[in-house]
Image 1 (cartoon, rainbow, N blue to C red):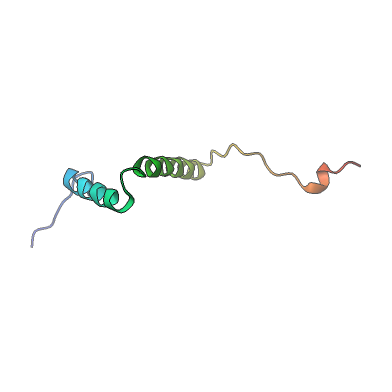
Image 2 (image 1 turned 45 degrees about the vertical axis):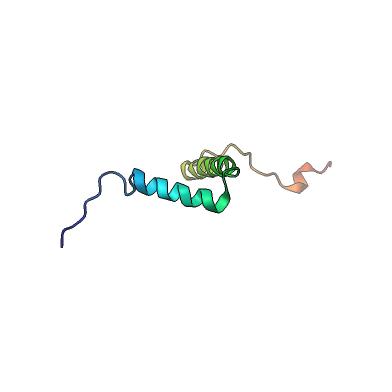
Length: 68
């Protein structure tokens, strides 16, 4: 049996179109832009977490904020 060698990507155009069609049937055309936006935010947040580019400041202890 011949070994299948895939180039750089596992999915071709045909497979991606089938996946897009199934997603469209499941979620409907109106929700696709919303899903794409949520996926983009997730991906950016995930990359920030992996790289350690966290812009948040450390949380202070509540006792530090009380007047003395």
